[in-house]
Amino acid sequence: MNYPVWDVSFGAGLLIALVAILHVFVSHFAVGGGLFLVLTEHRALRSKDSELMGWLKKHSKFFVLVTVVYGAVSGVGIWFTIGLISPTATSNLIHAYVWGWAIEWVFFFLEITAALLYLYGWEKLTPRLHLWYGWIYFIAAYMSLVVINGIITFMLTAGKWTETHEFWQGFFNPTYWPSLAFRTAISLALAGVYALITASVVKDAGLKARLVRWSALWVVPSLAVLPACGWWYIQKIPAEVWANARGGMPTGTHYATLAVVLLGATLLLALLALVRPAKLHLAFSLLLALVALCAMGSFEFVREAVRKPYVISNYLYANSLYSTTIPGDGGFSIDEVTSAGILKSSKWTSIHEVTAENQVAAGHEVFRLECQSCHTVDAYRGVKGYLVKNDWDQTKINQMLGGLNFMHNGVMPSFAGTDTERGALAAYLFTIHPVAANAPQPTDGATVYAQNCAMCHQIKAEDKLFKNLPADTKTASDAMKDLTGLFALMPDIKLNDQQRFNLAQWVNDQRASHGIAAPKQGGN
Image 1 (spheres, helix red, strand yellow):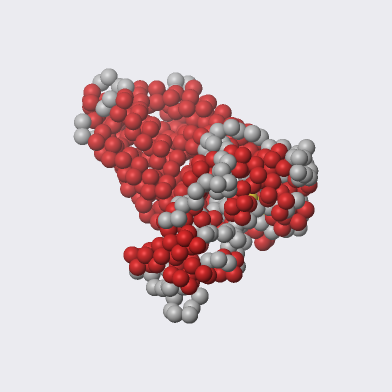
Image 2: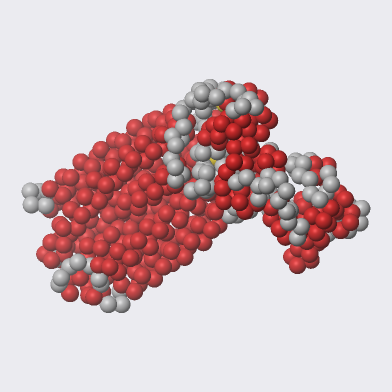
């Protein structure tokens, strides 16, 4: 709210993902590939293998073009996109870790310098000095990972930093070490994946076979240890956070499953390359790289999904709202904005008050300020599809907006703003998918549940709906006449008699099929 909104029609989050995933796929290669260069050169010098040395010279040029040129440009691209899309979070990361970033930039400068000297020193430096430049490059590149890993994992598991704001408590946070182990293994695997690309274009069958076996030796063991690293990583994520990611909108679980499948496919393809190493084709190596890229992207989506609805865990939301008022942070908490109003709190809007004449326009402005950091109208995470699926009228939209923080097991922050602004947002959302006032209302229990309950409730024993709703269908139906009386935090949704009766019956059927015990007679 302290900054203007950058409109990205297909989704700001998707733009960051596209830029960042391509960058990390290269930056991890930059780390593992540096070690690959020096160890391969050691191998060639020790065995006096001129063919291997000749290939390595060509591979080092490919390495520098990919990591130094594209890697550096895409790294700047990340800063550009996050600075425009999440300026408050970017400012927090800079101010909280200014010395960490300064140290990383020193390593990055050393990394680029050493890489260029390594590339251009093949014919000009002694083998010993040339290897030293290679080691300097790898050490600098790995230290860049060591520093950046602390800042990235801090965003997921900030630990006690939210209370103390102490550098080291945020840096060495709960997921720091498992993440470092995980990313180190990925870096080594990608060194082999990229090497298979340049190895696949070698004409000499004997040399190609040796290169493929050497490159695959980097991929297979590295991927084999990833499950253990991933398990360690998950154990350090707070249980309630991981549970939220597997809730009504299980993005984390979906992409975690996808990452496992794709990493398994990458391992399988690397093993297949060893079947006939002398026959490895460029198309096969590119396919392997593409699968590895998708696996890397899936992992990054898991990390992002688990952290939601925060940009910095338990501290800052994507819409530049702080979870609580923290002295010296210079921002707004949800409670402060709810009291003052989001339109009055924002410095970058021409509408500061909702009137009868501007209600829809004001609602659109509320959407831009509060929702657009994660959602679009009809593209990435589009709200239109959600509205069409549930077929809510304007009144129900307004009611549902009052319980955003309970939807999908808590993956969204609560609405920040006045009741009038919430009504304006509902009016704007209703223009996206208007529902006729006399439209027939579904009465079957499954549909009533899907449109009115599923966004907050799950079919499990500990869920309040399945745990506390009376077992007797008639009693349960009567109880649902006053939903806020039944569950204090429920929106006051009014269902007709048939909808309530069928919903109560459906809940009982689900209890029976899932082995969920109904409350005792007279319980609620």
